[in-house]
Image 1: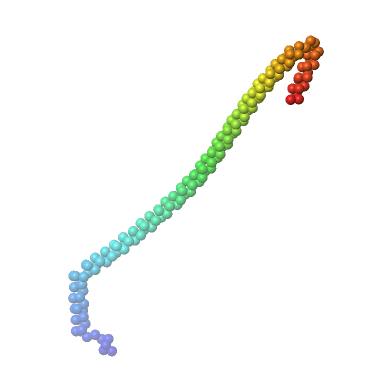
Image 2 (image 1 turned 30 degrees about the vertical axis):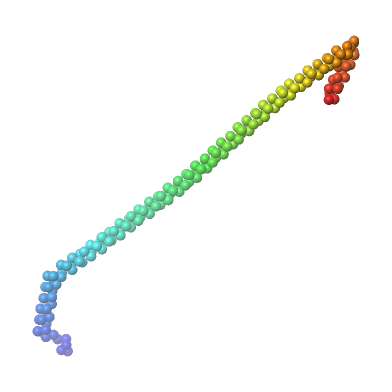
Length: 164
């Protein structure tokens, strides 16, 4: 069991070596090591605060994205409604224009019919006048003596006109 019992000299030199080592470490390495540890601690704290800030920014961006999506949906609905309203208005205007055009066509047709009727009546009057003159010429040529003979001749010409 001698292994477990230290000698006094070895013990003293070990304590002295450790004290020298501790003094040198404290004098030259302790401040830089503590500075490195403090720097490391500070960088970790900054990284954690940046991570928290990034998480908050992400949450804000997510909220903004949801708002933008909702606004875009509202805008889409609004545009669709406006398009439907405009389509209905265009259809109504087209119907009104078609009705106006149809009424104009009907009015022109009526006017043309009236003009044609008047022209036909005018031509008919001219024809009747011509026939009347022809009848008068014939009557005068034959120098009819009695009214009965004149009436008979007029009736014959009228019958001829109806046949023609």
